[in-house]
Length: 318
Ligand code: CP
Image 1 (cartoon, rainbow, N blue to C red):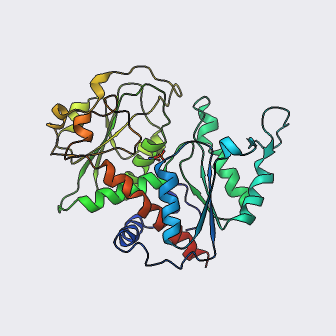
Image 2: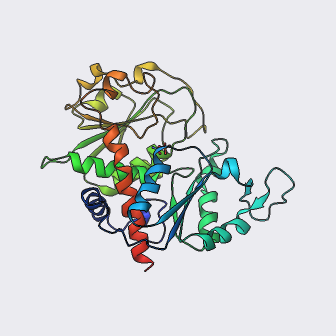
Image 3: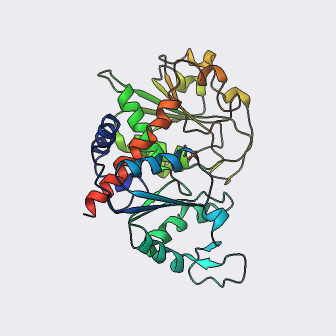
């Protein structure tokens, strides 16, 4: 694996999941793989799970992890080629990234979308510019449109909790939220479940909340949440803002919040969410604190996903 910015960087999803679960069983079995190597974690946006799980994963492999909160402590970066930098940006990525590439063996970056201009966000310029200029492998810690470490974690969590011979039915459902949120987690989850190909996959959302077809193609899509939830084995709950009329919240219909009553439609489904979650807005207390919630296990698995990805890159660059 050279970089890790989407499912397209993975040659075999099941092998990567197996590798992650082997680290879950034996966290320190490759404690020398990253000896004398450094990983840089650049954050242009906040994080709890991604930041800490990636540091723990790197440490398990013997690497030194250095975190840099670029948004708070760094110079404001410019990403446009040929920009006349007479505004707020102070340093161009083509100057900063090669330096970071000398300091680190692997560079990890979190950059959220602006949610103002769809073409800008969906061009993924920030992460592509780091890949172009850093000269070392780049791992996405969530970009403008995708969150691949989260999605790998989600497939790991589904695989380790599914013990039946048939394919699981997985439902991705939109949930209410007070703010316009990126489409990254939902795009990415759809991309990975479709690429994995070992589940019946349904996406449900209100009218006008369609996700980009490049990620959802292959899934069944419905605006009827009850119909979608019928016989579901896993329900993945996530809010996202509009894609077509970009970055808007049209409605915040509380009826879309998953409740125990709605869960009766499912096959005693397990409930997933990437966190952070707005309790009793996106998901009810009764579900989050109940026996069907996988959210804590899911967040715990972030370490093993990150460890499998970092190890795959280290092995390739040996
Ligand atoms: N799920 C996730 O990426 O969490 P953080 O934003 O806390 O990293």
